[in-house]
Image (cartoon, rainbow, N blue to C red; front, side):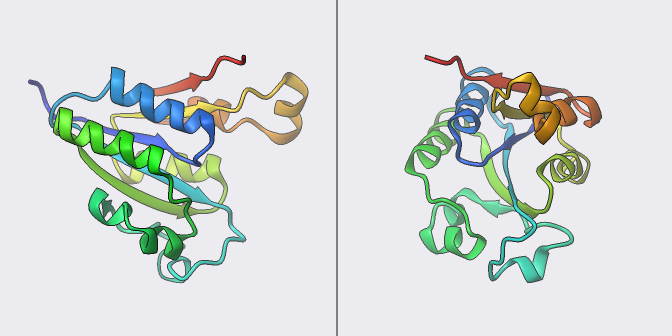
Amino acid sequence: MGKARTFGIGMDYSPTSKASLRWAAENLVEEGDQIILIHVQPPQADHSRKQLFEETGSPLVPLEEFREINYSKQYGLTHDPEVHEILDTVSKTKGAKVVAKIYWGDAREKLIDAVDDLKLDSLVIGSRGLGAIKRVLLGSVSDYVVTNASCPVTVVKVSKP
C-alpha cells in the first residue's frame, strides 16, 4: 500500500454527483485513503452554521456526525440514504476515512478553494451534461474546475437513457 491519498467529491445530491461518488468508491479509493464530500451551498442560503463558517467553510465533519439528520438540517443539506450507504460501504470495505465539508458561494470558485484548502490529491465531480448554448449562458462548473484546479480532476458523465 502506498501513501494514503485525499480525494474530494463534489456533492449536490444530483444523479451525476451520486454517480461520481459511486465511481470514485469503486474505481479510485484504496485502503487508507480519505474521501472529503464537498458541498457548496448557494450564497443566499441561510442556515444556522453559515454565520459561523461562511468565510472558511465548515470544519471537517466525520461520517458518523454527517449521517445524522440534525446535522443535515443545520447546514441545509439533503439527508440522502443512498449517499450514506455508498459512504458506509467504502468506509467499511476499503477502510477509507470519510468526512464532509460545506462551503457557501459560487460552486466553481468554492471547489477550486477546496482543492487548495484541503490539499486534495484529486477531485471527482459530476457533469450536468449541458448543451453548448446552456454551457455558454450558464457556465459549466466542470469546465471551470478542470481548467483552474491545481490537482487532477475527473468528470463523471452519466449516460442518458
